[in-house]
Amino acid sequence: MSRLSACFEALADEGRAAFVPFIMAGDPSETASFDILSGLPGCGADIIELGVAFTDPAADGPVIQEAGRRALDAGQTLTRTLNMVERFRASCAGTPIVLMGYLNPIEAYGLTAFATDAARAGVDGVIVVDAPPEEDGPLRTALGAAGLDFIRLATPTSDEVRMKRLADGASGFMYYVSITGVTGTASSPEKANRAALSRLRAVSRLPVALGFGIKTPAHASAAADYADAVVVGSALVACGAEAAKQGPEPAVNAVLSLAAEFGAAVRGARVAEKS
Image (cartoon, rainbow, N blue to C red; front, side):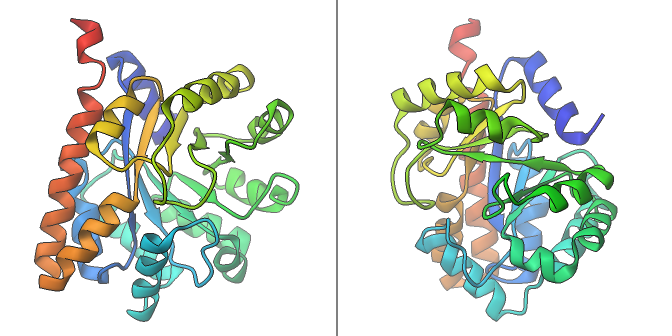
C-alpha cells in the first residue's frame, strides 16, 4: 500500500480530513525551506505538498509566483528539490510528499528519469498543473511504472463529463480547485464546493482534497467538515515571506506556528459531530 493510500485509510478510520500544507522548495532559502519541511509533520501535517519552482506558473497567484521566483533566484532546481525530499526521508518515513509544479521542468529532466529519481528520493505523488488528461499519457505511464501516484485537478468549470475524464487514470486523490482563478486570490465558496465534491465523488472513489481558496484556520475547519483533505498554500507562503524580512529563523518559526494553527483547525473540525 502506498503512503498516500495508507494515510487516507488511517484518516477515514479516525473520521477526519487530512491537513495538507504547501510550501515552495527553496523559499526563502534552501536551508530554511528544508527546516520548514522537516517541522511540518510536528505541526499536524498529514500530507505535504512541495512546490517545484518554475518561471511561468500560470495557475499561481502573486504570492506563490513570488515564492517561486525567490527560489529560482537562490538557485533552486528540480534536482535540489528531489535531494530535499531524500534528506527529509532520512528522518520521516511516514508522511507522504506530493510534488506540485509544471510539466516543462519534468520534460527537461526526462520523464522516466524524473519518475525513477522521484520515487527513489521518497516522493509519493505528483500534481502537474498544465498536463491535461489529453496529453498526460507518457508522464502518467512513467510515474505509474515507478509506483508514483498521479493526482489530477478538477475545477468549478469541470462538468460531469469532464470530471469522469479527469477521474479516469488518476490515483492517490483528486484535487478540487475551489475557485475560478489562480491560487490565493479569493475565498472558497462553501455551498458550491459541497455540491462540486458530491459530483466528483459520484465519478471517483478517490479521496478529494480541496484547495486554492483556504485563507484562514476557520476556512480550513469549515472545509474539513466535508472534504477528505484541505490544502493550505498561499497563507503559509505569505506568512513566511513577511517573516523572512527579519531573517531565515523567524520565517521558519512563523510558518510552522501558522501551520500548527491550521493543523489544529482541520483536526478539530469534526469533533462536535462525534460528541
